[in-house]
Image 1 (spheres, rainbow, N blue to C red):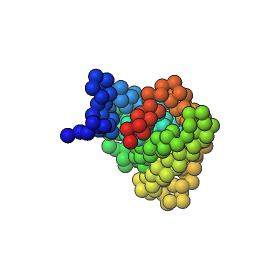
Image 2: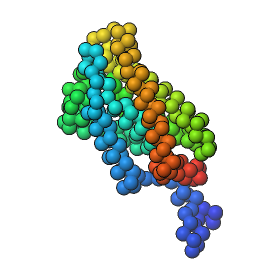
Image 3: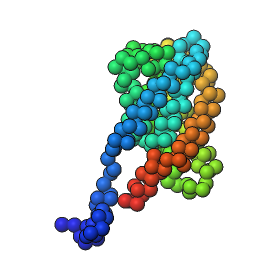
Image 4: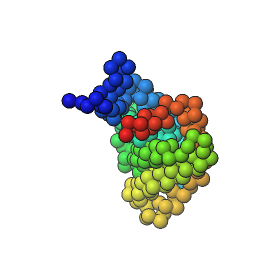
Length: 222
């Protein structure tokens, strides 16, 4: 039996503490956002692909879309969005860079980057929640710097780390050669992370229901 403090106040429709503490399930809006960001990642993989070296790993806007997904949606929905993109690509849709598709991409030098996208978006989503929770709404510059640092750390560990591993394994490169090949992607990633943070902060300001109010509701229920 719930106590009087846990029960909703009669006639007010206020939820009980037990109800407020329950994890919020994804609704149609969440599913729509997951689909939209998965589509954004797919489109970004096909725009302005610039070949780098002879390994067939191009520079695209895909990293920008992946980072924006984590920054905008938080960990759970970002994982779902990137996971949906990967599943569709593995199933045969030509949505990987260069219009590739299927499980054959896992044998290519870009395999590590592809899996790195999933982990990066999830990790950055979790770090974004921490930053938004620990900083005040008026501390825009502090927020921006912390989110940029979170984006760089996530991309260095997961995108670049797994990317180097993928090139070393699938392209039969030494670790040092794979590391040097990966360095070509850093200047573009710095610029894309700056742009991703700028866009994400604008989205959170214009649409606080996207993530900010979810965090506040979770904190209020804790």
